[in-house]
Length: 311
Image (cartoon, rainbow, N blue to C red; front, side, top):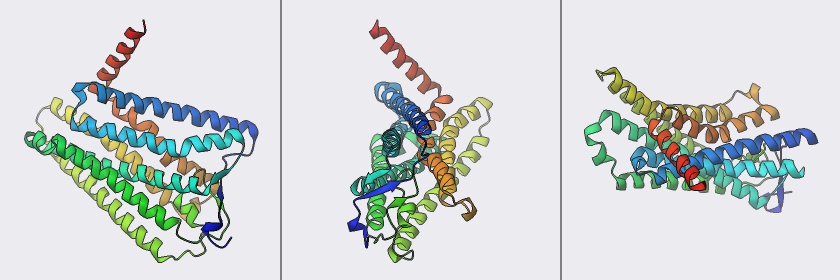
């Protein structure tokens, strides 16, 4: 095949070739997927229905749950279907859609986490001006900017990836269509467009990372100046879930893409891809609800309301 236009489908890497283990993979992914759907849907419903949670922090958490649902729904259902039907194939346009959607959701989530860091900075470091700075219009604009940035990033990467001629076969060494694995199929590994796109993406990601780090340095300095222990505990309880989510997201993605060459193997790449594409979407709702009393109360009221109306 001389270029990507002659490709009708790609072949994804299966987790196993054994029928029993394929069923185990299907069952495990189904359990993880249902847990992520349930947890994120509960947060979305609780934030949308409880007026006490109509604040900037929970508005951004609502957006984060939507992005988590989108990212895990882009990769896991196709992988489950392939295991269940004992196939590896994904159509060319299905692969294009998977790449664009996954990059969109992951990028938008990273930008949204940056916005959430700014929200926590304003709440802790400038509390008297919080409602002036983080009014409804500003929150909507920042959330829209995160979604729009993710869309533009997905458009840029998808257009660049699938405009490069592919002549190294059609086997993608991953359980979903991942850009680095698709680029390995290209005829040339020194495409200038790829380098330019990589420079732009790395610069944006590094800028967001520096912004998050600087924000939390200022936050921790402000928290340590709070005289009362109760005040410090409340401030930390507001910031630690977000910091844990950022750390989980950044560390898994960085380890997956910046791992040493000695770690390169099919099984290692599979496990790392699960780590950054599935685990954050499942754990984020648990991290945010674990120490958040307001969210826990809203979830309890929602469950109680459902149980009462079922009787």
